[in-house]
Length: 237
Image 1 (cartoon, rainbow, N blue to C red):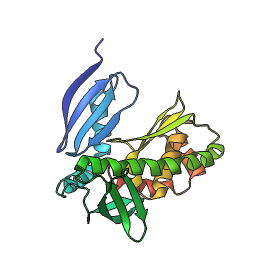
Image 2: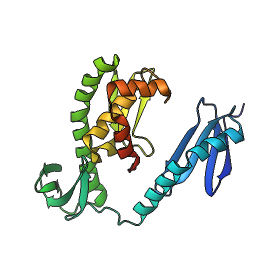
Image 3: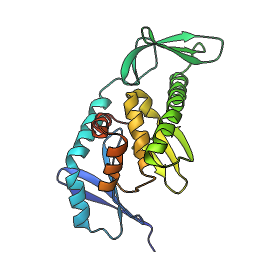
Image 4: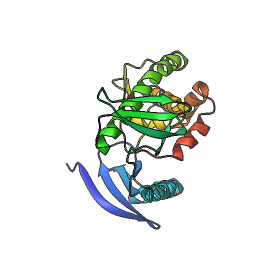
């Protein structure tokens, strides 16, 4: 039995990399940095149905492609003094200081983000210090959110974690009752992190993004649609 099969699909002026797999549901992804569109579809889904599904999401696809295109024109971050870096929805100036002690971040709302690292540290080393701080911040915020929403939703999360993701804000393993949150959420307002936590927890009650799933979100977090729109305006990196 064939496990996968890849072909090219044209939907209006958008090129789509279509892969048929042994899966239950269609998945549409727009990947950074070039905005390539990838679609995974079950073997049972017809070409016409796939074409219609992509056409229905065409505005969403082009919005993401345009965002990636605009980002490519920006200068790549060098993690040097004077750069602006976003933290929990606000932009702060970054200041880099040499230190003989451990690398660390000190943040002050007035002065911004202060990065301490060894003299001559490479860009990837300075980036790693900042991302480790982002991870630490998220891990300090998430437990309280989960504890708050467990009795509201009537579910229990067995495990959770934070990791870099290219195309998603979060994932949920229903069988293991484990959720993962995207490291990039540290750049967005705290309410966005809260929404993704609730979203993934809701999947413990409903696997699909159907009307029942939306009703669950409505009951747990009224106003989630507005928060979702904030995330749609951004991208993962």
